[in-house]
Image 1: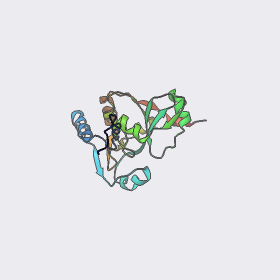
Image 2: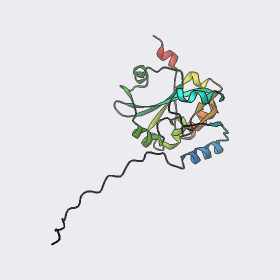
Image 3: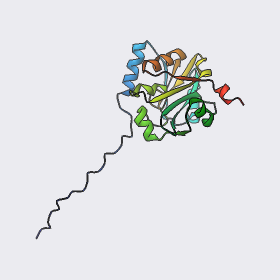
Length: 189
C-alpha cells in the first residue's frame, strides 16, 4: 500500500540573496566616462579589501588615495563617506555634523542592495548604481583640493586615478550632490 499524499506542501525555499554585483555595472560606468569625456588612469591588481592591502599597488598611481565607508544612520539613511586613506574618522562628530543621531557601518547585504558592490569595492563611482538616490555622498574638502583622487571602479581588482573635477562630474551625472565636509574643522576641539 502506498502512503497517502498530503494536501499540504512545504513552502518553497526562499531565494538566495545575490552575493555578486550586476555584471553590466562596469560597462555602464565606462559608458558614463565616455559620455563625460573622462579617461581615467587605471591599474589592475589582485583583490584588495583594505587600504593596507592596496598600498603596495598604489605606489605608482598618482592621487590622494581614499578609503570609503558606507554608514547607516540610527533612524535610517545611508551615507557614503570618502576621505583620504590616512584620515581617522570620528563617527560621532560626523553624525552630529550631518544631522544624524548615530552612525554604524552598513552590512555587506546593505552595501550590495544600495550600491551593487561588495565590501572592498565601494567608492563614489558606485553611485552610478544608486538609481533611487538613497545614498548621501560625503567628500572630504581637503581631498578635493588635490589634483587627482584614486578610487575603485566597482571592483577591488582595479584602481582609477581621476582629476578631482572629473570625480565631481561623475557624481553629479548620477544625480547626487555631495556634502563637502571640512574634517579638519570637525576634528578641532
